[in-house]
Image 1 (tube, rainbow, N blue to C red):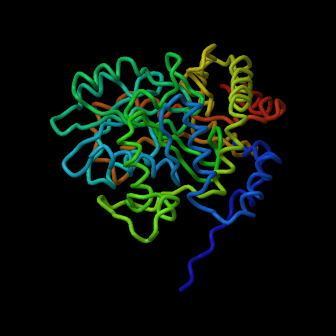
Image 2: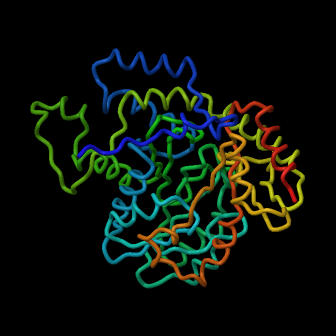
Image 3: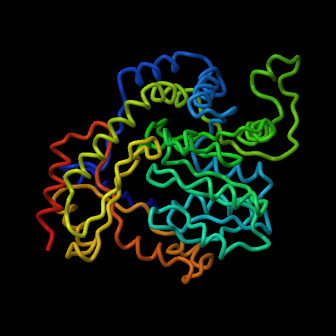
Length: 388
């Protein structure tokens, strides 16, 4: 029996204000077309250039490109020796990729609370640490840097490793150092909605040579030789696999797009911050809590997330429905981990009280580098009009 074809709601429904539009420039398209004319379409010069440029931009010693941020999280955990019998602490308010990646290693997630800034709560970490705890995954959610100083100090005192989830946080700095450089590894996403995109893709940064070498092997089936080094030898089919790996490679086409996009990351961040500032300056509405506009580089404004509190007069869900009716795309990032059937037993309700409250209030408004001010005004007017 053939599977029922799903209706494309994005085509069916009229959208007057989209949540996001990818910015694919003429230079991006040109770089892709030039790559398609070449012979090597995987593990060639583009991926090496992309990795070198990314490492230079983030100030890390090594960068390893992979097929997604989930792949980055997975092999990062494997490279750090995380596996069966281990627990990894992570915040309740994050994407399921963090939990999925840890479960894929045989380890288990330990879900903890967030603070009022949506970051992982150090107090909750302390309440949930066990003898099985091996690592912590702080998430720089929405593009805002987590307080890494206190977290690193605590992790070091307990001999715990840190895997930074930087999926939202390209061009985000903490104390003048790019996020991802505080843990043993930092994992980035290039999904279409992210600050730069390769359609699908990810990157891992590290300052440890041994980890970098292991990650490069793990992303390519566990092979101990690169494609170029194998063909520089007499017999390219001769290589070893000491640790089984996976096929998590980023191809040359997507690497070309990444190289091109990274060139304008400062402009992208600047435009995002400008749009975020416009929202904040014009959303002086009772019951709506808006993000603070920071004058440093600790927030790259990947998402503009408001909180709809009781003082607004109607619920977050009601406001979402109003936006939807008017063709304005908004959503919630994310449903907390404990809400999923697979992870409901990995969190203690008494330890996720902030997450429970904040989840019912958060809503992300349309935001992307080239969002028209007229679109933002439609969103702002809708919020003001429906306050009760």
